[in-house]
Amino acid sequence: MATIVLVEPQHPGNVGAVARVMANFGCRELLLVGGCEIDDDAMARAKAGRPLLEATRRVGSLAEALADAPLSVATSGIVPEGDSRWQREPHSVRELPDLLDGREPALVFGRENHGLDRTELALCDLTVQVPTSPEHPVLNLSHAVGILLYELFSRGVFQRPYRPDIIPRREVDLLVERIMEAVRASRFAERRLPRAETTLRRILVRGEIDEWDYETLMGMFKELRPLRRRT
Image (cartoon, rainbow, N blue to C red; front, side, top):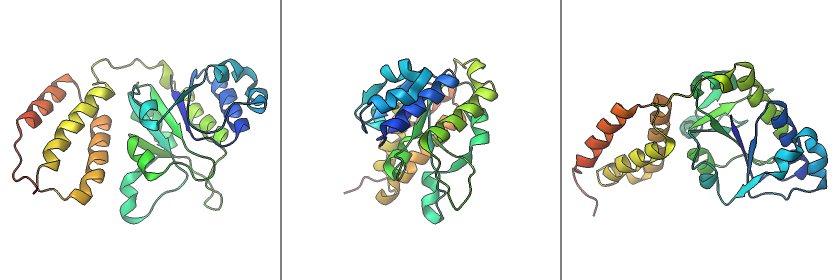
């Protein structure tokens, strides 16, 4: 089942509405990264999702919220142009069920006024966009949550068996860090490091490396020696 992560939500009523739509689709875990307090308005709007809202957990950062997620999916209503496009690489929401391949994702939603920033987008493995009118591309928070959960629920994603041979996210992060240690010590341009790290992590997660792949890659980069260290 998906975990819903709300980053600094601004309006308690929206949080309550998110809990309500989560209950509609049997989604049971809601995490808040900062943001507004849960008040009476939130509870009133939650309806059947009130127990879920009462069990909501708060965490100190998005990185903490995603620490145990096999896959994280950011949502964005804006498709960037030019060189910044790499940071979001938006997929259509219709593609999401096939990209998960049985993994239980953390679905990340940003602030009502300006969504997720670049640093937060870079922490996520995938970015999806819901097709909307270009005149009004940004959806209401609970509507966006509902659309993503509908796409997953209607395609039977949460009934698909999890593939046990897929390397856990924590192991992927260790491999990325090992590779980046070698890259930082090489002649690779420092200004390109953030882009390289984000791209590498996304490739590894989407590629669903198995245990043999992981052992081979980790062994290679443990033994790798830099061509020339920076001074």
